[in-house]
Length: 245
Image (cartoon, rainbow, N blue to C red):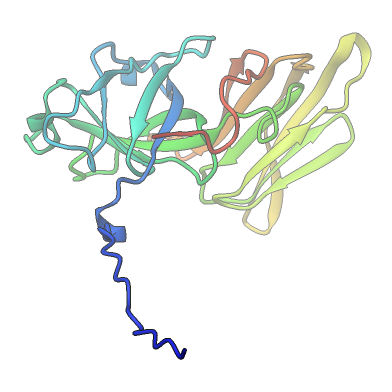
């Protein structure tokens, strides 16, 4: 007997979810807020995610004149944060209530945000510099140095030379020391085709802690100056690129 089989097709209907409609995981970041000058510190500062829903809550994140172990945790859809003087979402667009904004570096979820004076005529009163704060990016016993001045700067620690172009960010790891675990420091600027000394002193070795160094031009005198901030030993609060769904 010959049997005849009738072919048939099974159609499976799959509910496809467009990629654009899928919710991207939130980025969890821990931020510490630092005022470059005492007049920029402020207790009532709120971190807001500009990409979040209109009902999203803000996070209180005071700007302090020092660094310690305290931080604020923010949940972000992207890497951008806007800081306002009021906690409500409308403060993102109200005149005079935007303090500044920052974009977190890729892969960084532990960050120091340094609040600098704003540019003349800008909507925000501050510029915000983001400094990765992980053990790998900013290890114990190091200085994180930034040259915000328009001139080349040279820092000598003992006999070791560290040169900084305008805008350059560098890490000074395990700086050389002399007697008493201190570094003899001299700072120079390159002006009128010559290196001119602008500062001298002694720096203690950071030990298990760290330090922030900022070279900048004084807006009143035009002189290049150096400002330093002591920091604590690096924490390990989150793995790199931590995300939550």
